[in-house]
Image: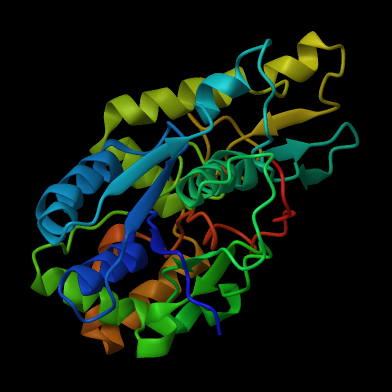
Length: 307
Ligand code: SF4
């Protein structure tokens, strides 16, 4: 088996990837060369401040550079008639009244693409140079055993996925326990502020705990009712109406105070497993990570070679 040129962590800055960073920094996992955070430009303030903190308190002392990469700002691009927009999974009311969901391209465009670009540069083969088959990075993905179904090969020759938490047998609760013990019990979920996959708990948390961010998503929701700006400017309007909330109602009046069955299950779990406390406090286990989007169904986009 050939040796990886570099060992990198795909850092979503959520529970699992923060755990990987911590374990590497403490020497329980092999040394990392880099951690790469892919920024959609529209993460909650809590994620950016958590990222700053883990960089300051975990990564830097351990000599692990955190590289922040980006393909742009997903919110700005959606509303810019001059910018190509990689679609978010918007909830759609079709002209016949039926509900639908637009195809998700955002994870590939805003999360995977900048990571691939950065890795190629680190390897010395920026796009469109071919990367020799023998040259590759070992890429850590933070997937815990309770979400093993999300683990898959990257499909990219020069990025070979490794799942340290699966090898260690760590559950999400194990990760949270470790993070709490190290003073990082408030590790947030990483996902775009206005991700249409949010559950009611996440929308409520935004409304109740972060009024300015709530206002931001309510405004965005109203602004995308007719779809993304570029498509409209090109004379290809959305046939139907787009919404961030699955009820197909404006976010400002959507029934986000309704406790979903998913939430009830989490509360029941809390009765029997004290470890679930943090899970309950932080909402359901959603979160969008570059290679293992926890929002909705697993990523189905093409992982193949694109710039
Ligand atoms: S969090 Fe949601 S909107 Fe953002 S990249 Fe992931 S799936 Fe797309």
